[in-house]
Image (cartoon, rainbow, N blue to C red; front, side, top):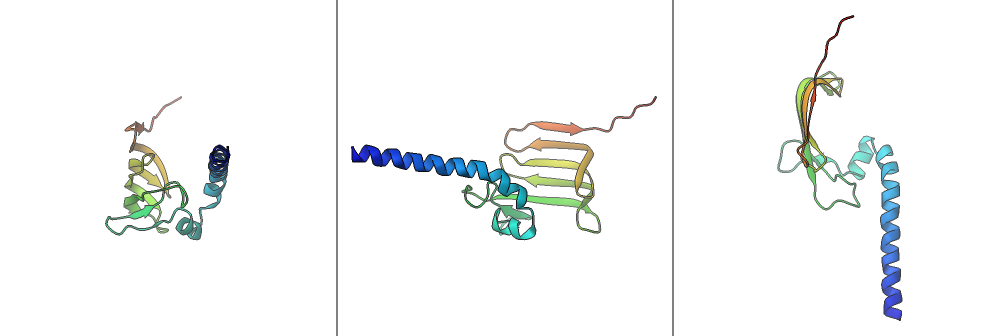
Length: 130
């Protein structure tokens, strides 16, 4: 009886911890955008063996392997992507984006491929007249 009770309580504790992490993660991700939070929560740092940076994609408590990202291309005076450039992120939900940027925001025309699933998106400028 005590073994069954111990296993049951252990599974309940694991379920409670998993639920708490799942519910708190969106809140943490929203507020962890400052440079200090990037270093502490996602452990963003310059990559030791590749060009670019490495990070923990699910935060410091839920990731087993580091993933890498980099940007190569034109930048504006604030060092934000501006003009033509390529963004690469090798996590499953990361993407390879090649196209235009405007003050750090991607704009059409572009081509983007999701790293894990291989899904491809195209952004085109469409002109029309009235």
